[in-house]
Length: 276
Image 1 (cartoon, rainbow, N blue to C red):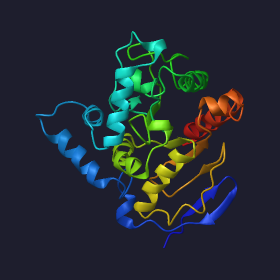
Image 2: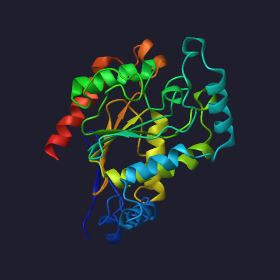
Image 3: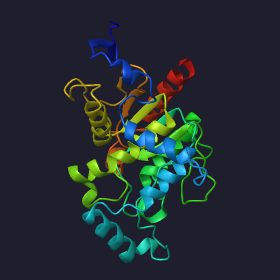
Image 4: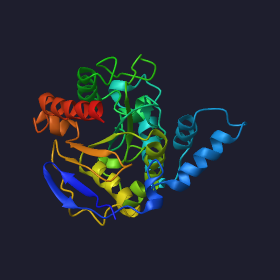
């Protein structure tokens, strides 16, 4: 039987062999029920729209978490003084980017007055400003700014999702809320089939690893420590996982994450994709 190995940086450790049936699909057993649903939607001539659009509409209409629904709508109603002339989005925020992306970026959640206001992840806040400048420098975006939907921003070979699609109170989601949202990024990954997943922060990393654990690709989280510019490799067809600190204001203002540090991660991703 073939022995699969996982690499963490330059250190290799044994990894559980993947069942034969799991190796054939885009993400094996992970999200296979969602993949089947997506296939049925594509084959149905009455649903002649891209599957990512179908998924995004489901995300926008979601009301599974009463606490998040109440908070996002309250923020949209009360607004922030600086944005009192805006009509807030106030709904779950779908993913966006290149439908042929080889890089999938997973963040934490929309900001209350960022994505919850503009309707696009990492848009209209300082975190997004930091992230898109880096993506532009690395060639993953056509411009360095992200102000609102329809501002001309396009991602190139990259797609952005999130662990949670609604802004959480105090930026702290509950485990049950993350569990409710997980099928959304599972289905994005199944549809996109990226070569790389970039997790921004520890919560995003654990959300992704939780999917692998439940799909029986890994036993648990113990072997996977969060560290900036770290990466983990898994058996095919799973993408390589890269890690970065989240570009939150807390991290960027304190210089825990600098532009040079994020640039380094993205250069490593570009190099890996080019060689894949």
